[in-house]
Image (cartoon, rainbow, N blue to C red; front, side, top):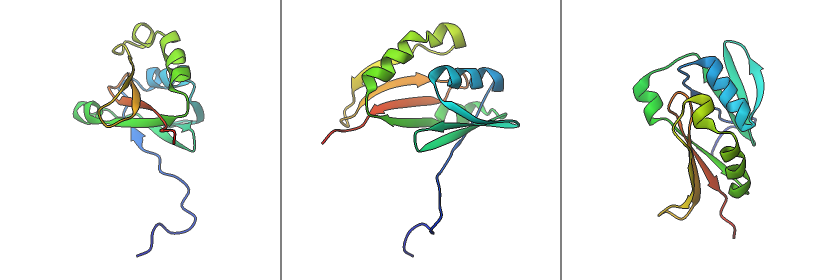
Length: 125
């Protein structure tokens, strides 16, 4: 077998929401573009995206992680800090960028359902 068939566009994971409307506002505050809003909400994220669904399972949400690779983590961190996510959305305070043992510079953000986001700076060569 030689790879993915031609015409494959992108992969978009489905993410859980405890409060669908709160999660949509959270992602809009972060600056993600909502491209569809109905029984699910689709958000663009760079060349990919994700789908929020009206479904919550605590064990799944607590173990669900997303990584967004960015060119300028300092700019993202400045935006994240300015949003006061913990107060506005009742989430844990975001963790500032730190170099991880595996080499990437990463900041951590938890969404209202408990999904952990890794905002990782692209390695420069």
